[in-house]
Length: 399
Ligand SMILES: [Fe+2]
Ligand SMILES: [Fe+2]
Ligand SMILES: [Fe+2]
Picture: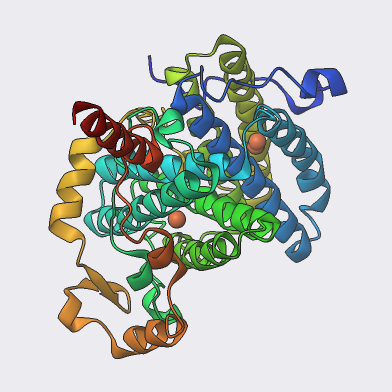
């Protein structure tokens, strides 16, 4: 049954309590749990990080809201801790990175499929093909640096092959700003989508900026630097889909609704019972935040939250493979470029973007170097070598 945002009040803020032991739980297993458990943990960490980010920005800009923001923000912080600490200690930064890109592909695909506005849906498809390529580039690095098969983590849900080549994703900043939805007429689902994907991309950017310099391998350092730059473009792109004419409280209300929606989606698909209990608890916590902000919205703006929020939540985000959809988009839209806010064919791209990327790539492109001649195959590139070696030995014995 669809969750009614007005009827369901969740758990009130003053009862949202934690202890250190409660915050730090048993992590999921990187190989035994379903790959989507990892992607959900990454997504929800990103959503919570964005809840904090937004509330800090609002506090800088608004005196009246400060105490309210401080109260809810502390709960968001502890939620983020509990979620992020579900990541296991034996998962390397590069393995977590593969999870980030798998998340970007599958969640953006689900959003693109369900997005009611054609321009917004186009934007999600456009970005999805770029993150799809990142998964391939990082997989090449993983095979070459750690000598392991990325598919052990990806679990065959997502293809590991080139998308729109990262080296051509670099665009002039003015070709990354998009047209926003109109907050007065947009479907509420469009708003939830834009907030979700912006939060996920922001976190991806921040993660690459944190772990990139921790690699010793010079090519790995360059690879993270190059892909982090695209993630900054993605934050610019998706962030500009949100209408800047929404009031602060309207944005806050929508953000809490997005948090409810995301936890509710995770809950619908989760297979790990301990992790599922966290999603259930936080659906209730977010409903508590939502109702707290609904009261502020009524009292301070004298507006009805029903103007902004959907009555019930839409169908959950689909945590499943979207291989056929991704392949179709890849075959039809891989050569698409952007010119200002519009999507165009390769010949119509704005020369400023061509110039921008020629300059950045003028001393080589790490994403090209890392994947030169790389084709994903089960059991890594070494398996191919071992096979060849085996047939050579076999040949000698026969002589
Ligand atoms: Fe939260
Ligand atoms: Fe991205
Ligand atoms: Fe919240």
